[in-house]
Image (tube, rainbow, N blue to C red):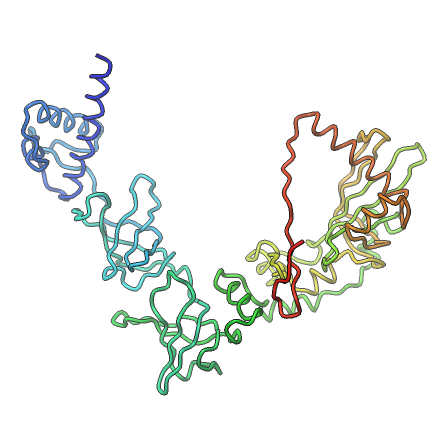
Length: 440
């Protein structure tokens, strides 16, 4: 008996979906249960009776309305919706709408109106779908372009040029007037920007914005990949200018506002190939037998002031991106590798977390605030490991004690239920041309 009721419920669910499709595919037309049954080619009395029940239930839910006795109409049919274009290989697209309940809407290639992959668009949704599973529609407005710049290859002829994008979702070549080549030659790798796309034109019109170099060369291909995924290849001139104007001189007034760690043993530990040192550790023995340990982070906020071009650019980039052979920094090199880098033998501004700990690695006191430090030494990880194993070298006493405290903290952490997520970092050994020679 339970199985029969379950099957009956499943049949009703399917019928409900089919009934609603009839209304959605026919706009504001009214139907009674006989007409809906006829649309669905349903003739048996039991199913027709179920359809009548569905119509009455949907009317109670205010999905349908009973405009006259036994005649029903859909309450609201969304005619216009907004969403993002998800382009397919054949040139058609699905519009991913903001409304999860709406479902994706199919748009044929001829009805995209020059919309590209990722664009935010407004579409008209047809009342009737020929595809069954997905509603259909057409683009009536491109609200926002997702992308206007593309990396690719320049193809040149006597009177005009075309730009072939690398992006597989960009299915149209870009027409480049000869006057907009900006020095690009046939077969060169470059970045092109779309400048216009007349409604009647099959291809967009653009200009060469930047020449990347010859195809196949490591630097050219790396920059091409970066450009394709929207990573900036350089900083705007205004941002570079602001960075150059920042003074490295630390005033006595600024020092007076900070806790002074310049006479306390401090050092950095980073990968051997690191160029920017953004954190340091300090250590000193206290008279009561405890230790004071400071973790110091470069105080970038002292130099990157809200409302500046530098701040806006850093916000846009969000983070530094580390690739196999290069770094795409969040800040110009003058800041990332200079003013804000905790280089040895230089006074630097930091924001710090300072802890007093006993021999059992128990925290006695803690302090957080702005500091000024002076790094005594720059270590690579390998340098510190060698000191730990050999028990000799610069700051050996401090390093061994820090290592001992670290093990105690780690053991306590795992006893309290912490999970160790370990992964192996793979690095590539490259030749002078950027060609991989091996991994380590």
